[in-house]
Image (cartoon, rainbow, N blue to C red; front, side, top):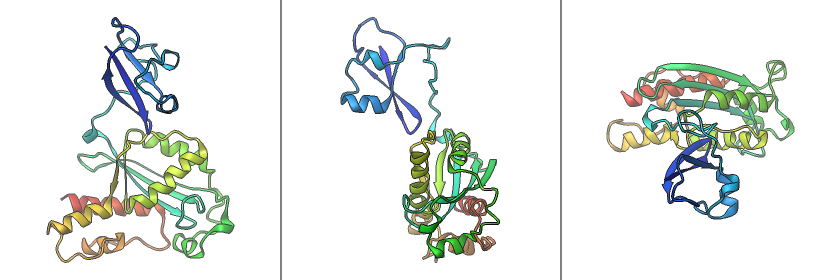
Length: 246
């Protein structure tokens, strides 16, 4: 039997299908999801695009063994941006705390200031929140360089943020703009939703607001200082997560 794999968000997902061209086929056939989607039928015989070179373990070169979901690290992420609309506005700082999913212990931390390319489109309110100024951003890096580091550090990790839709919309736009590969797990975790769910189950009493500052106040966590720094934000998210999971 041939085992096919589809690459989704940097992860190879395996599934068995009938051998495409020979009952005697063995090993693993890997096809790129984009190519298969263009062909229109991922189960058809597409020998010309299947990689059949294998390692000593019987796996194709470049193949990533799938990691169990509950063993994947969490990529606790916070960003500072020039506004609120991905595509129009841009990331000017990324903060990342990678933690062990089971213990919530920190295994890595990283942050980077990023050179804005469209500062004229920036929202004044957003710049005020993050304290953007030319002096503090003198040593900022290009977006592509930052995303290369982020991609490497978040490989196989599950993205987590407070209001993850906002943060992920900018992160995925950055991956798209730079062409850097996204190796995160395709699931996303949202701190806001976790807190809301626990409040509905009566595990969090008398909590009616779920923004990060209110959650910090509820759990007696020192609030994030102003101006906001992305790494500080990610650290506060982790503190709140630990309280929610305790």
